[in-house]
Length: 377
Picture 1: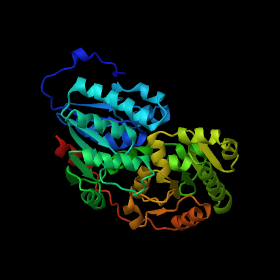
Picture 2: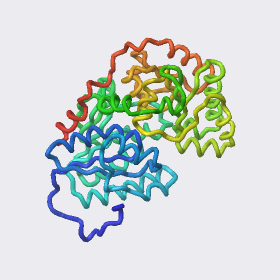
Picture 3: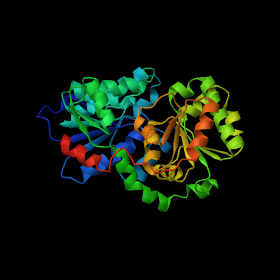
């Protein structure tokens, strides 16, 4: 915890050539892990700030262990006390700024669209540090999503935009972005390639749940436009019931803390726990979840990162949203955008299960982290 620093001791010497990496959620940790490792393998001074947007053990500390990277020394513990977007972002902004003033880096890297990225980007911009946005240029064109606000703002204030695909580059150009745009691929490819063989060797997740390779469905849902609406959340439970009862597949559901809280708030938790053939579990470690996706018949999710991971692994995905900022996955046949209507979802699921996984990965060859460090340093 370094939020309350002695400001009289803040250095005022010229900025060093250090590079700062900001993380704060499970997907952010995973996507930045190859960059952290790349920095550690080079003669470059660097440090990591954990903004604390995810703070449960299943979403946090075990991820660092699985990824074989050190837990950051800079952690904003007070973030977990904030409930609303504004106060959460403000707390992280103040905390990150204090650390940057103390450490005096030259470069700051953020990744994605969560609130901690916006906080880190604003802090860097106000201190006139060089800001790089990893996974830049993504657009859902759904202005209801807080993530869409964050990614658009970050693109406009960044010096370097590291776009994963040509589509993302085109989005940034059409938005009249001022920073330099570089197509690098997505660091999630680097992370999957670094860890999939380890997951296949070490994970016992299938035997733990008593399920067989290719004979189950993975389900995740956490976005507020889905789980904060009781009607939509009820539809998602109906989807699970239909998968287990009508389609005949067991479902593994590693539940996000936000979703579990809403199920309890809306008096749906008992209904969820009573679904036959549903493995209702707390968040899994990264290696276990990677293995779980890798061996699934298909995955139902509202997560952007999981749409990418399943595409890379050759596992069909059904997206529980009305749109996606990963259109490349849809174009190659790896993903179907179904919304939350149970009939539509089940139709897409049935189609996905029969899909041949012969598509080509559109997110690069696993060299994104190397390219990003080459550019930013």
